[in-house]
Length: 343
Image (tube, rainbow, N blue to C red; front, side, top):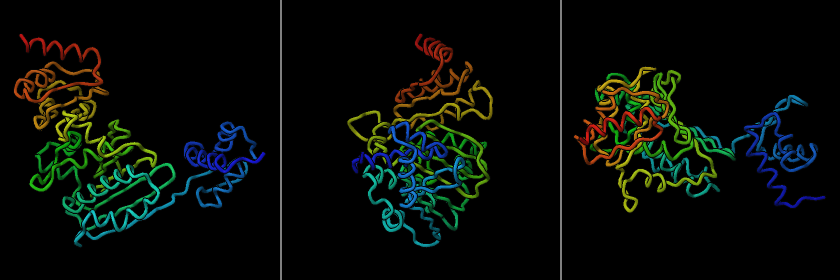
């Protein structure tokens, strides 16, 4: 029985969207989905190969299938030239996005222009390289400069003990090394718009995957590398992200933040001291609402807790402190400190 064009297109789309996770068994996986013979599925796969949508490697039982990007563009720019992020986006990047949903294009424009501008204004480098790759199931944007490195620059600007703590400051938002010219919002919002966001510099790496904060040692990157990835089917909009970080839903204003508490911890140390708490709390008085995320934190000390939920809370009554992902013992300690504070 002949299948309709709509059904044939559905089968092809299923193969394309699942081949990345099933490079060796996509034939069996598709057979089970559509109740078709191996021969029928192979026909669709070979059609996709002829269309240059997938790459077929190996033969017989060792055959593996891989997606091919529809676009893969790399360009290098001299920072001494009079670069403008909007012109670079409009002339060199936007033409690659034909057929992509408007909300996804808007997110990519926001992320690209913010990060490209950071390279122009802050990197102190000589060149910036961009790489745009578009597959059927994801879009990736990579921007690399050869400058001084974002973590080192933040460390020196804010006189931090270690470049590691620059990651904590970035996670809070409203951070810039040139406050007269920048708001410090770009990286914060970009990291939450994309499915995957990564910054690497020297041997440090900070990123998020669908807003779960990740930290790991990266390769020794000279300058700064930023990697952003989003699904072409994403429903995220720039407005929806902006609205998550305002205390008043009826107006826009970046006055709410979420801070991963684990970034105040150096290595495997426990969070016990007032100095650790002060590091976590630095600049948080700039926000009306601060959500402290205790993910991956099992225990905190009394002095650490007191500094946050009594000292800071008393000194900054216009900043509301909230918590998420805190276990029962942490909750009890916070309530005990707050109870003593109310007496």
